[in-house]
Amino acid sequence: MRLISATEVNLVETKERKDEKEKSKWLSWVVFAVMMAAVIFTFRYVIGITVISGNSMSQTIESNDVILSSHLLYQPERNDIIIFRDEHGYDVIKRIIALPNETIEISDGVVFVDGQPFEESYVSGISNDMEKTVVEEDAYFVMGDNRTPGESLDSRSADVGTIARERIKGEALLSLIPFRLF
Image (cartoon, rainbow, N blue to C red; front, top):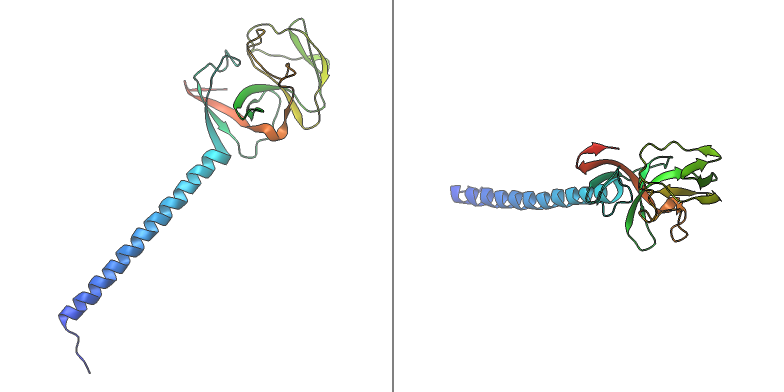
């Protein structure tokens, strides 16, 4: 039977501590990578932060406001302020006015949805008239809150048209800077 010396015991303990330290270091990196993936996933698919450029949503949202939006399991509804991707890849913010299969028209500056005047207390400016239009299936008619002609490029323009459901990223929840709820 061989006796183990104190030096050999110290060497074994030192090697075990080094192994533990190495495992701890790797575990720290794994935890860091998982946390970063969670942050990236959250900001890509759950919430978004957008800095507004332009006055198309003026008085509700102003240029340079910082907006927090929700992208998870969002179901579009009338009056929601949404963020969608335009055909050039830019994020755009507008308000849903008409839903799929509804009829919309503007007469004397008043918006009519399915023949009924649409109550809008948030609007600034007066919109030009627009002939009756039926919103396509799985699409939404959106407008900026600033209805002064030339201030908002939205569904009233043939260049934009209605917004297909798959282009909608999510709903604007609140303004972070300056802080206010919508």
